Image (spheres, rainbow, N blue to C red):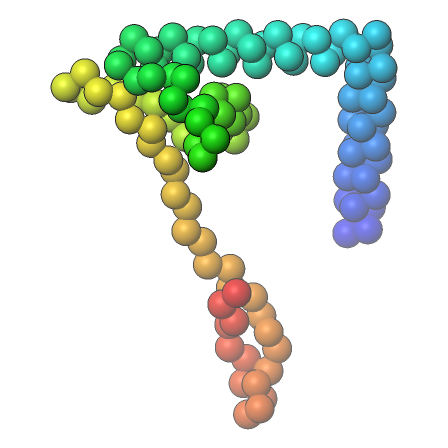
Amino acid sequence: HEDGVLTGVESLLRLWNQALAALQDDGAGKMLVDQELERQTDQIEELLMANGVDAKAWSSDEGRSLEELVWEIQVERSVSLELDGKGCIHRAVEIVKAWIIADAGPDEKGEMSPHVL
């Protein structure tokens, strides 16, 4: 069990060092990420505008930015944009509900029962 944890930590450190090296490489990694985010944001903005959504209003003070929408779609993959049969575009959110059941040990009577967290 401990060997698996150590292997995981070593892998994490190796990945962290690779990421740091890429970012320190004259900022090239950051420029690529920024350019990709900007390209994807432009694509989403065009898609919204083509379907009658005012993309400028999307980024109002009270709402989320287009960059956040791109992040939700591309990175988190918790949101998608869907076209319905009527020509409207909808933001669909994936909702996940989970119960974690843990062994909490014996109760006052000495009986084992699962504990829902």
